[in-house]
Length: 184
Image (tube, rainbow, N blue to C red; front, side, top):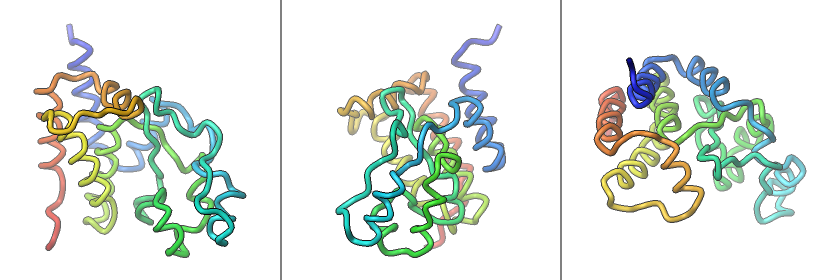
């Protein structure tokens, strides 16, 4: 009989072997459709036009207390779609369609790392690598006890990964091995 933890490990390994588009579909099936747009559309447009200091998030888009993060599906074509600096300075990132709920997927931290690893692999590091590197470092620091998550939302996201420290370290290593080398 296979344990829940063994099922979880196999799930993450399967996700890592999937194509990016298949992984997104799997996560939508597993975690549900996004409830709302990432940013409020009017607020987003006012931000771009300099009327707001920053855009408001869409209603109920965040699911942090459930341990889920949001991932912009189109980050395989445009990097950092949640970054206000990117949005302010990049015409392509100002397309509100990237912020629509249909273009967002919920994921836990380990799933989020895998999504960015898949993007990096499929785009030969043209996209996804920076997101991968940032998320990987964050989770690895938590796993190693270097920096423990303090905020409720971060703690819930970390706790949603139902694996032991050893299993998390093993999976992080497998993800790192999967990644293409970053050209310097």
